[in-house]
Image (cartoon, rainbow, N blue to C red):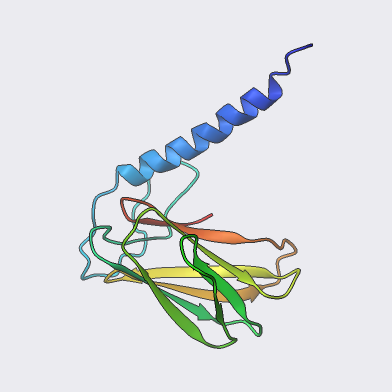
Length: 150
């Protein structure tokens, strides 16, 4: 049996990317929660936060459906909810890290997320995009307050 080094090298490269992203998030400082905390910091690395929140305070997430079809959404620890077209819904969490999934109820659709954060309210505007690539993405909120689209 021959040893194939390619899977090992791919695994090492993947771990390296994620460890750099986590290190970047860990180096950040807590923002003043009375101001807009859209990501205005940059650390070298592949994975950059789209917004920042104060991880000590409770977090609310407002999902705004700007599409013409319903969206499923929810934290990985909760049951999925449905947002009708041109509607919005809010959920709360005190637990970090948190993963939020938002995906269309219709097949072969690409979504674009626009994030902002003010006073620990993360607003995610979701719209359909003409991108040829469909697929599900998630929003990850790190333990130190970085908010990422992954």
